[in-house]
Length: 275
Ligand code: SAM
Image 1: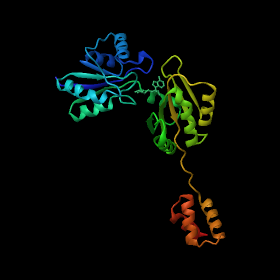
Image 2: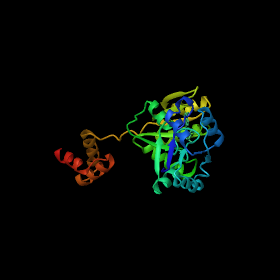
Image 3: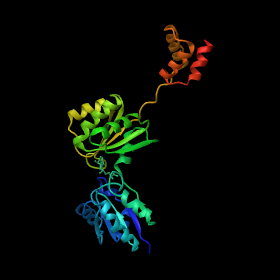
Image 4: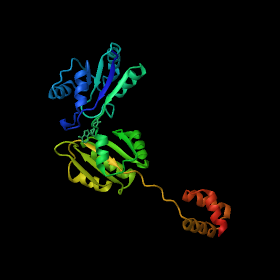
């Protein structure tokens, strides 16, 4: 029998979201890699599964656990990977194990299921056709500043994770980077008793956080950057008049207007010579 690494999604709150196939795979596995043995032990007990072996694989131990997991796969074992909640590998351990198993030629299988990012995105009311997952922003320094600028310029919907005690600061930083009117959705405590979807502008979100202290788990879903305005012919003509009124040659006026309005020189030239 050949081994397999099996990524198993677990609930992000509501235990009813653990799929029958997830239970089956957890029951079949010779070992279950998890972040916290007590938490996963409780989940397994809830569904009547007694895993033969629980391996601790968290942010600190994942690199060291790779050799053990590969040895088990070599012996033909099925090793299930779960995290505390949601999809392994999404702002959670799993990526290294998958890369190592795939590089060693082992089968990698997945039992898909809950993930806060996807749940928050689809419930946000913001466009879902194209989106970027940013996970947690860097906490400080130039890494944070640069990522905020990249997020602000992103033309598609952006999905972020944030801890409740850092939410106010992150929303304020997003408002500074994206402007006060950018739309945002705050998806709180998804699938749980106090699930809440709040929608508004970044300025309103900042004000709300100042009024109501954020509690629980949040996904922040941010609208994409607005498309740059395309200058119409009248705007180009008016800009050319200003340039020429200031004494610019046609050649200089065309260059300046093309650069200022972000339109091709050829288009500006055609308008300039057509009068
Ligand atoms: N791997 C997980 C997944 O697929 O959803 C995410 C793990 S990440 C360490 C935890 C973050 O996910 C939380 O800080 C929060 O931003 C988000 N999150 C997890 N559960 C959530 C829930 N029920 N409602 C809203 N956000 C949640």
